[in-house]
Length: 525
Image (cartoon, rainbow, N blue to C red; front, side, top):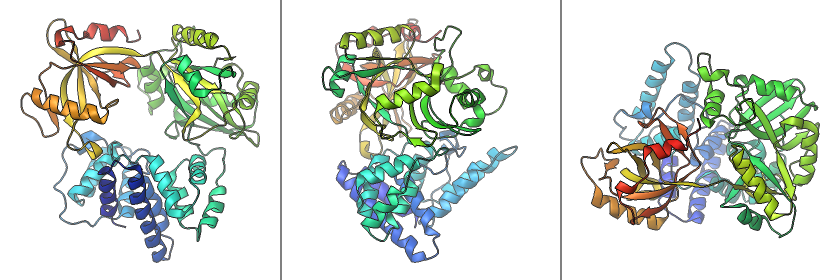
């Protein structure tokens, strides 16, 4: 299959807001990919179908390619007609991912230039989005999973569960679409099971502004819940089989070689085989979390020389999916916690089990006071809904807000084409001017996009590179954020974590915006 076919479908998906239309377009291309691979007759197209499914979800099959925005700033002129195949592009990225050692950067740059030089303008846009993880077509993996179900005539729940257990959509798409009929597809999907050593997509939590709202989401009133301490670390999934241990991140990347202390902790636990879900973070001698940046940098370390590599990570587990031959995914949380406590010991996340809203709120307040990120309120009856924001978990974090000034805005792409989207945020410098802290497009409704497009067109000031529009620093925006971390990327030395728009403040002038000193006061020492 030509890459242009996938890029064209991606554009069509981006052009509609209808989830049903997105699903139908993707399902049609998946059926075509399955038919073409079957026509080949030698099975060579089956992997290509998996790649098509991955690309439509906005993901490369390779976890890391070594490419980034910097390597795509200056691309060769696009090709005049499409010639790239999906299989050929996947093979090119595979070769780039395998490059290492002296001269690898030069070789990777040459390979990327050759690939992009063979791509048409539409294919270049598509490939850039894939590499950067910013395809922004409004068709995330959940839509592709539903499209696989539609294309195969299989139950959507069966496809979701298979994807959850396989850890990827591609293999499931191949299995379902290569089945001769819907019944055979359902039977094939049922064959996907949990395997120790193969990562499972993690269960995610919904959000609530406070504990009372979280309890209301879980219902019914008066039912006991588990109020888990929410740690500000990196999500880990630890698999042990005998003396073998593998550690995966939330994105299912294998980081085992980089975290020997977590491997040692897993080998010390009282079970021979298990799959544990938790967080890893750096803590000080009192157990207080160190700045998140230290945890993130430590877990990302590949080679020696990084001073943060001496910071040791400690695992904390809050769920168990398997132990010594027993799968626990479908068992209620109360039973999983009983098993977890018997395995994890001091590595179990602190929690309170209560039916009292006041007690739950008090636990949240205490957790935040101890330097933790908040709590996750969990239904004790809920199974482990892997790969989804299940209704059984609701996270609560204290919300911080700042009044900042918009310094520039970026032209939108995908479904935001024609709008001014990403805003660049600045804090007021007491000595004059503004200090950039980062940018965000989170929290913007369609109405917000329409309003700010008109507003920032009026405030446009100076030349534009066609993508970033500088504006006069006059518009104040209220921004919610989860924390402030050190950053060498921005001139103020700090950046906001998970910044999102709350509202635009027409009642405040730029002279009343928060200062960079106020922003820095939120940063961990």
